[in-house]
Image 1 (spheres, rainbow, N blue to C red):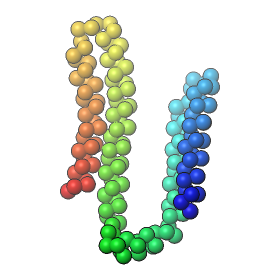
Image 2: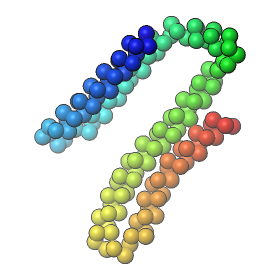
Image 3: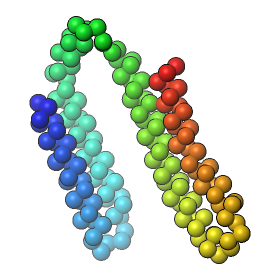
Image 4: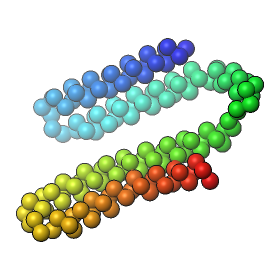
Length: 144
């Protein structure tokens, strides 16, 4: 079962990359990002559903083995790790988007007037602060 899961994950990753390369090389300039994102999210969602369906049968065996070793994790612990991963992951995705737009605007502004470099760095730093906040929240979730 583990080999099948690894094979499916590899196929989805390679398929997503090849489809993204195909859309990037095509001459259409509208909708490329949307198509790439929808494809990636769709394939990822299908894989998550597949993992849940395939992993449900092994859940009882894993819980029994964990209880036998004395290192059992509760459902709440699992949700804690998922919440920490989501807070960090979503914060870094927001940071990437913010730094991309703010950084491009800052470079354009500095190319016209080089005296405002310090002011533009402040805005880029503020955008990067989003990732730090997400990391702090995930640390709080994990250790408190």
